[in-house]
Image 1 (cartoon, helix red, strand yellow):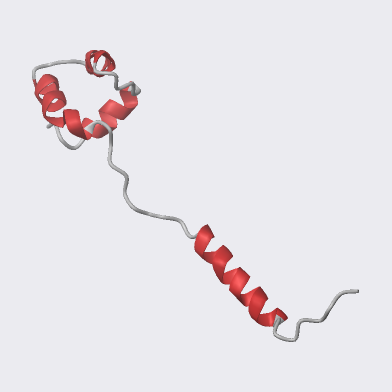
Image 2 (tube, one colour; image 1 turned 180 degrees about the vertical axis):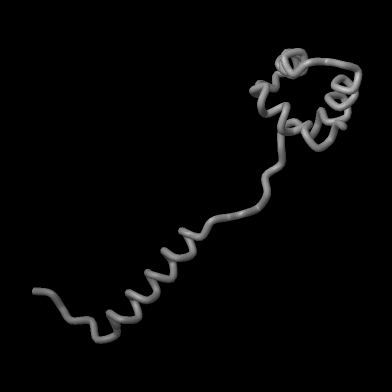
Length: 81
């Protein structure tokens, strides 16, 4: 036989559970840092010296940083003029 728990409030439990769910569903909009940040000075210098995106991508690959050429291009778009 199931005993009735008089201290159990269904409404409060539902509200508490919904609050928990709401907190877990909230997105974290913290801006992530690019893995290219550590190579920014070298990439800018190489690009200004005339290196192509393919050359920069290959250089990064030799540093164990595998990214697409479009990623390098977007990273450098505002940094090199």
